[in-house]
Image 1: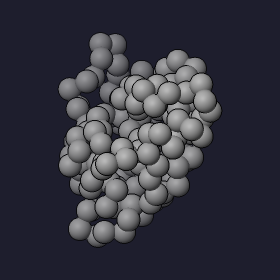
Image 2 (image 1 turned 45 degrees about the vertical axis):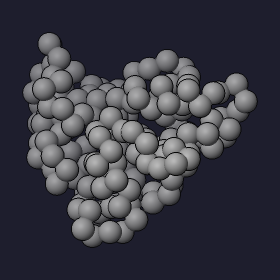
Image 3 (image 1 turned 60 degrees about the vertical axis):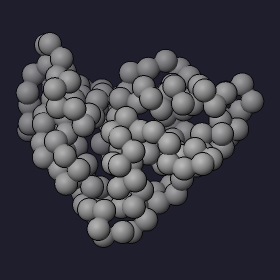
Length: 155
């Protein structure tokens, strides 16, 4: 696994991936695992896309992703990726879109396990009563939602 760390307007970030695609994006740069090799050059495109998104210049990502998870998790992550930029869905709405056999708790667990926040934009999922939690913290989630709503102060 190759990795890079870099500064962003939203804090220090860690990206990691292999030949299949990106596997991890973390707001905790201490999450580097044993055996990973630093390779800034290999992850330049991914870093530039993330920075472009965080600067409000990019709405989609074109880099390959390869998050590791179970079949149900991957189904939730794929559905989350279909939520359009600048919009939100509730956990319940997403569960209904995925079918009767997917409970809200399954969606919540898959989102909590999302190894690629931003690229799998789980910040676009909210509770019926507000933003809900997010692996990067609620304050950061609010900033990302404001960024996508066009609030220049969020950058």
